[in-house]
Length: 428
Image 1 (spheres, helix red, strand yellow):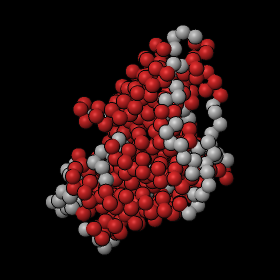
Image 2: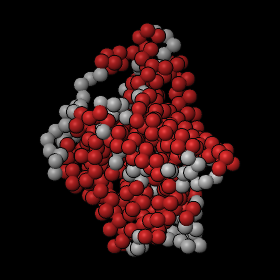
Image 3: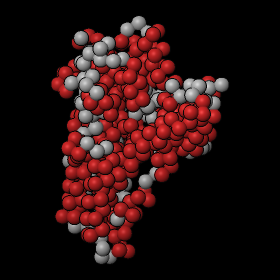
Image 4: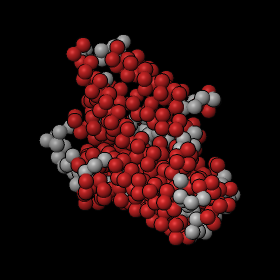
């Protein structure tokens, strides 16, 4: 009977994919899927633990909820910081310097900026920042979504070779499976291939000039904000985003604490500069900015992530990882399959399952298994928009539809993924 859990997850995933033809917000089936999966986990006694296993399952639910809340609060904080910078005209510091409107030039510029920025920050923060910049650079929806897809692929490729660029690489780095300089040395070229091949593929269709967006009506009151205030908000926002990895490394607190710390400072500063003339300046305050956040997306993330947590608690992800290890011939096949699966389910539990299944007595630090796992789990999620944190963030900021991404970006993302694996194989 426990197979019902998998059936419910597949049906829910299908409903999310068919959001547009069903004319249903994706948050509704995602929430229903998450709630049904956990209801079945409890009712069907998955794993045969009996009544004594109830407390363990509830504890597992709250464990997953803590991790999910950390992601959601980070997203909420980062998106609010970015919106504050945007509302105050801060991104003009960057967009005014990107003068080219040529689609092909912008394709490669956006791709490489995102790639190296995600290695220095992380792919989630980078995706949010770049998506906000794109809204200022590109007016046509199809172009905007295409560049958004490029940001997802580039951010995941850039995060894979850096110890702090992607949450799965961080997990392997902290766990001792990979070391700093070795992971950089071994994965930077495959990661570049993972970026360059999709850009080359998309280059054939990127001709002509992009249409810049029309001036926002809210910008009519931009003269209410002094140049000093604009640059101050921008500087505080950049310091907040760039400071998250530093804050985490120094305090060992999760990233959402760092982003909320910076947001609180920005909030106090914007309240201070907008205390006069509230009627004219109210739209620049955090209370107004928060109304722009797509709360249905937050509920969507909650539903899909908690459903994946249910699959992990029920043991299906571990069973799947075990089956892959027993039936696939080598580490390339195993990690290749795990990378494809990471486009469907969250790559974090997959990597966690692999870390638990394969002790370092089997695969020592810096073994090709761990390097391939970092590469595949980090980049495989690009094939579907909800397969990575960067994809989820860009979906929330730009409103990209699930099936549009599949039709437009799946092929170039898959080409980059396979090319990265082949490159690594040739280099080893």
